[in-house]
Length: 362
Image (cartoon, rainbow, N blue to C red; front, side, top):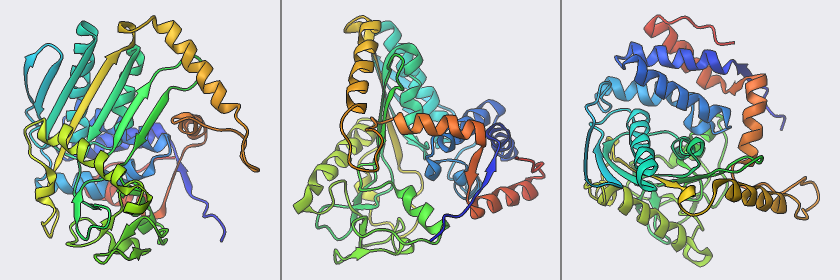
């Protein structure tokens, strides 16, 4: 089957367009710019499941529904120099996460580390962006989030935990930074969205029905279904699925329980969209508190080069560490533009018409 040639669009124009759309929905310009920057950053890195494809169907729709507050009143409380808890007031997760991560970074500048939990937020896109905010400060960045229960326990029949991703970013010297951004399910939920947009089936091993039988139709694996769902990282019990399941629960504890929101398992029986069960955990750790930064970065480069020089199987040029492929994709897309599916393009045209915003994105 031939690969579909997709239209390419100018990243800067997509960013400006996204901000204008959000401003048209009542989001202040500063917050709209923050959100637009993060959306396009996802597409630049090749993470199309969390980019501009969500602008209309997800964020604009939820603002209209009242599920997302366009002008949130963020409240932060802290009882120690290195930790804090924030209430996101149902604001755009991008805006809430941006301020919470900056708070963690500021604390790390003073005390060597900083950690901020967030409750009552909304979908914050890709965790890598927040973790990478720590890199210019010679810090290790952490970003975790809870999400809708859409993942079954190994051999379970009903969804009980979210895809609950984690992201960690670690600076290097001349080599790309190490940036791991992964769901604790076999795949991120956004992979199903891409399959639906492209009218493609999904591989066996991604999801199961209520009897544990494999599903290959992405339309049968939506959040809110009473039975079945994505499998945890590792798959079934016999292939180590309890490891991914345990990671997912641990992230729910750090994001939901530690922030005072309560576990998302109690949302699993809702038949429809449960709203905003998104709670987050952010961290920043100063490398200089352990050893000289330059020494650490040299060792990161040396380690990366060692992995890249490992022997490979036929057809594979080199071994990549997390963040390496994305760094190359960013450079290619900055030069050639961001490719978009036809369905995504149509949503942008619809937003242009509905909000009377100029559609010139090439």
